[in-house]
Length: 325
Image (cartoon, rainbow, N blue to C red; front, side):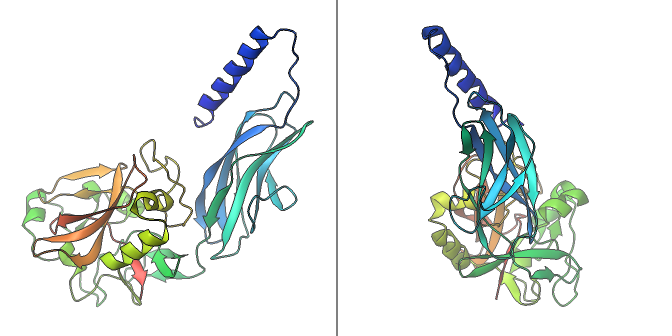
């Protein structure tokens, strides 16, 4: 794993310099130094955790792992999963978590000097509720403040009444649409399966409704409420983005996904039919029009912490997230 390498090199160089300058001094053993990485969600009750021992403190690390609990700064006296010994990166899976619950987690390592802990990570588990759309696609759900959101982007190909949403693959035809249409990024079904499908705004405001029963496409006001709850636009993006680089381009700045929202960079399709920006950024239509030609979108980017708001041409193809009615 690359994330701990730079820190390890710096620490080793610093230690070496001290040895050269102070040859008569013998390094005293200390507790290990670690980092903790944001979780990756697996299911309503399971997450994958990662940590790294970047300095053994001058003594062999005999045990390392992850500890977690319902209170801040958990220790090995709470819950723990062990994952080998020594320095370097490690991972483990936590199962059997409570649904819709906030947890605190830290990496730990033990040597003869004591127990060292990494930085604390906060995460919230998904709800027990799973939603199914008219096509049979399933979506996890998560509670953020007073709102309940779908975790995944929409993949549906029919309106709620069963009418088909046209799939438009032709580049020129896409830009000529004045009614609903959808596509997969680069017309690739595999992209649709991972990132959800891209819809023009005419699909969003169609009276036949694309949201599962009991849900609706989130409005501009809904996104404002979400942003405010997370501390404002400048902070909200990082708290919503899926952590790591499995889907996001490096550096995926500030991504903690502490909300469980798991935002993915699904890219977009412009009014000329051109696909762009997958793995770089993700944006979602709101149900709110700004003027006859444009509607509001919310957007997150690989290089920023922000959750942006802007107006976009209704002919664009964007991802969609739904909120519970």
